[in-house]
Image (cartoon, rainbow, N blue to C red; front, side, top):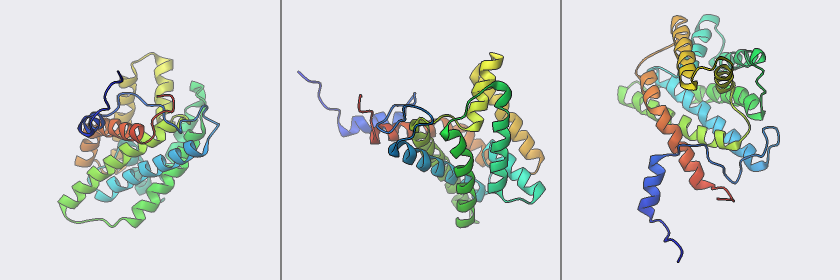
Length: 231
């Protein structure tokens, strides 16, 4: 006798619990340099949502993510637009892959370009609210957008972004736990960005607290939208 189909409530609960792994979907690419129409759309949509979330955090002006705080600090010091400094920071991190012998994928390259463009475009488009409640709402919306974008981007299967690749390369080279390596990188980048004049605040703290669950929910949403043909 076949197992009964889960109820709508059960499916909703499973969705809210999030995903503990990166699921395979109908559009997941078989290789990092072999895009399919589905994997390419998933990658581009995910990266644009990710950049949009970063822009919303910047617009709220309550503190951004560590890497955007760094890009913001560089922007303030050089006078370059935030999209340009985000691109330059991404390229600089990619150069750090060389001694670690990391190999970029299509997602690595497009990560640098698309997120930088999305941040600049959306930052210019979205008006900055003055009310604190509206600014906090932008922070939460930004974190949700980054989480959902991560779900699409990670399931595309085209390789890690420059920052994640640097983290995994350092983990492999040093033998330190990946969580400890990630924490050291994020703290160092955040302090550097703050010293350059980037904004650190409640938005930064909320991002640190909520981004893990936001990404898990984003992955669960994508798994629900496009389960693997083999699943």
